[in-house]
Image (tube, rainbow, N blue to C red; front, side):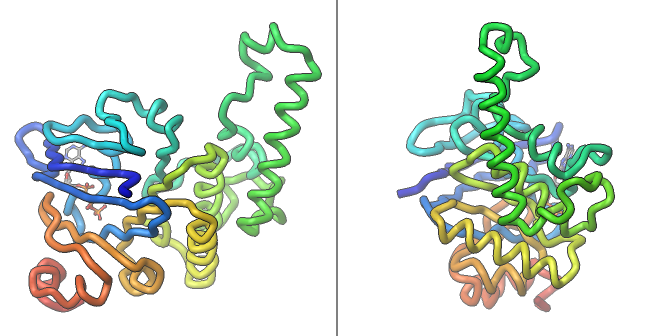
Length: 253
Ligand SMILES: Nc1ncnc2c1ncn2[C@@H]1O[C@H](COP(=O)(O)OP(=O)(O)OP(=O)(O)O)[C@@H](O)[C@H]1O
């Protein structure tokens, strides 16, 4: 069954058509790739799915329900969460505090906390801190937990971004170029973590320009060009198609 179903979606910026009749199915538990040349519309599609950019036509369903009218945060509550090409960490805050800031529903400093007992507030924070520590260990970031996030390498920032996403306890994660600006050792690390998450049942959709690494880990991918989906299938099948080879540098992939 499709967890995420994008049907005939169109989107434009002024008169420019960025998405033209795009359809895509992401199955529960799948690890799916989305590739395409610069400006093909991949990030725009992520933004439309997550509600950052309105669509002009078509429909989007998540877990069997239409989400077209939901705001960004309401889509996140349903379990749909994304990263951005450029990580958005709070550079002055520690890695640990960046993770804590992503914890949903912490009421320690909210008005609601006036009606909760201090013990209840402390328990919630304790639970979030335990989750942060578990995730930092999983992501191999425990050793830099007290460092300011701005000091991390490009790859560690991507791992932190993934961690902040996982704090939301999503059902489906959408990663926008997770390997961009990351050294080969950390690409391997990130790749393993993504595969491990998927092995535990997480549904994953990845936009990536590193076709070699992506092809190694995803069983299936879509290809976009000029706002349209031009191919779908296994990496070997897709990357050998003439239309795809033409889109990529006139035939050289
Ligand atoms: N906010 C915007 N306003 C106007 N045009 C935009 C906007 N965002 C994207 N575009 C245009 O829409 C097209 C698709 O952009 P998009 O970022 O979705 O492509 P992409 O496939 O993610 O590319 P890349 O791989 O380079 O990130 C591009 O021509 C881009 O210039």
